[in-house]
Image (cartoon, rainbow, N blue to C red; front, side, top):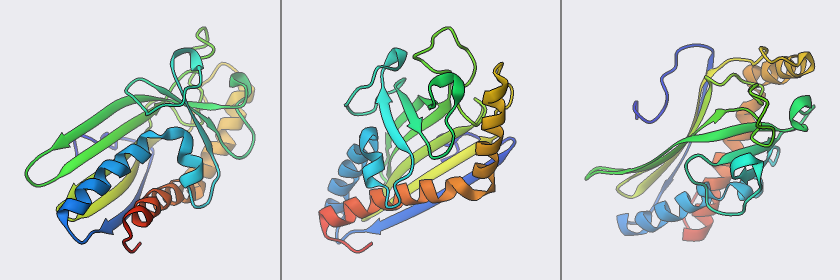
Length: 208
């Protein structure tokens, strides 16, 4: 997984896991496909999370909202609890920088990596519209090995973004980013993974 999850170099890192076991590999194969489909339905993440908090909206270039399966280079607009980012109409933004689907004799894996980015609806503004710097990343990974499926979230290089031109952005990012680094973001990602796993467990009638 070293080539899928960005290397941790500086700042904070965060990992969350959930797993499911199935009666057979054939059923696990079907569940794996369904789990990937749920992961790519970004607009439904809020509904999947067992403790709904952040609202996610998939967008195309220039921040145009779309209702489709996530693809490489799409954007995701985040409406997080607490004060919004002043310069980007209250939203944080990430870009889909990697989408990997791989299969070997031993396992199958699907992963997406997101990185903070400028607000695509304001193309003239090159400041990172997120409380973490652009070096940080969020990777969602679904891995199947025989009759088991692993759900993983990996946050890497989480550094508070206080280098924007707008001072009010920097103040807001400092407090939101500090809260995230102190553990406020863990329940968000853990509840989302739990929700994704629970949806699959319910669909295929297995214990979670």
